[in-house]
Image (cartoon, rainbow, N blue to C red; front, side, top):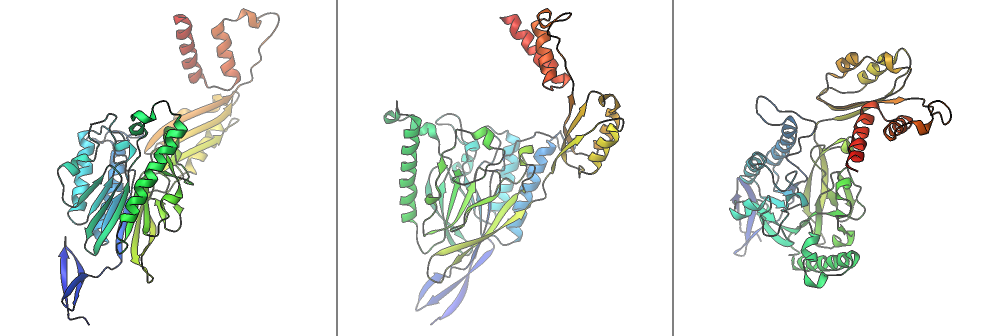
Length: 435
C-alpha cells in the first residue's frame, strides 16, 4: 500500500517518488534521450568569411545545426544527451572552435546530463597529449561525462539513473607498442585486439545493473554498415566491430558515431548511426542529415527496450548538375539545366559535356549569371570531346615530336581539358628537368 507521494527536483525537472512501508524509491518511468555524432567543427570547405562575424560561413552552417540539436534537447524535455564522438575536424582545433563547442555544451549541461564519447578525430597524435574533450573531465564540469576508454557510467537524470557502456575509438597503435606484439602480422594483432575488446565489453555488460536501462555508445565501424564519404579517408584504419558485441539482453540501445550516413545496423536491440548533422562534401550530397531522439521503456517481463526516431535537419544542400550541350544552342541548354535545379543557397558544381565544334557557342558570362544564386560554386568543369589523329608516317611523324608534345597529344586523345593538360605537362617538364 502506498502511504504518500512526494516530488524530487533535479535540474529543473521532477521525478515521482513513492514510499511504501517507510521505504523510498524512485519510480523508473520512460526516459527520453537525444543521440548525435560527428559534428566535425572546423570543416570550412565551400565557404567564405562572414564579414559580420569574422567566422567561416560553413562553420556557421555546422553551428546552426548544433544549435537546433541543443534547442530540441531543452525544449522537448530530453533526459539525456549522448554525443558519439568527433567534435572537431582534427585533433588540434582552434580556440574559436573550442569556444563555440563549449558554449553549447554548457547550455545543455545546465539543464540535462551530457555524455561525450571520444572519437578518432578527437584523439592526439602522441601518447601523453590531451584529447580535445579532456578539458571537461579535467575541470569536472557538472553534468558532463567524458569517455576516453571503455567504461561503464551510471548517470542520474530527472527520471532516474541511466547506464552508458562506452566504447571509444580503438587505437591500434596502443597495441602495436606492446612488446608481445612485435613481429606479429597485422591480421593476428587485429584478432588479439578484438578478443581483448570482447572481454572488456562483456565484463562491463555483466557488471551493468539489469534494473537500469543500458545504452552502448561506440565510435566505430560496425559490421554491415554502409559507408558515406568518410570511407575514402579511413580505408585500412578501421577495426570493424561485429554485431554480436551489441547483442546482450541488458543493452536497450546502441548509439553509434564515426560513419556519417544515418542508418540502423541492428534491429534488436536498435543500434543506430545518427549520421553527421551537416554535409561534409559532395560524397554526402544525397544523404539526409540529422540526429536521433528515442525513448527507453521498461518491459513487462523485465529489462529495458528502446524506440527511436530520426529528426531531419534543414542543412546546406549540395547540388551536382551534369549537362550535355551541343550545337549552336549549347549555352541555352546549359542555362536551362541550371534553372531546373534548386541551386539557391546551395553548394553547386557544374559539369558540361560538349564537343569541339560546339565549344565556341558556350557563353561563360551567361552561365555565371545563371548560377549566381548558388551559395558557393565548387566547380564549373567543361569536358570537351576532341577528335585527334596522330600521323604515324610521313610529314609530322611521331618520331618528329618531342616527349612533351607526345604527352600533350596523349592527354588530348583521352579527353583531358586544356587547363588540366597544361598543369600535367608542367609537372612532367619539371620531372624531366630534375632527371
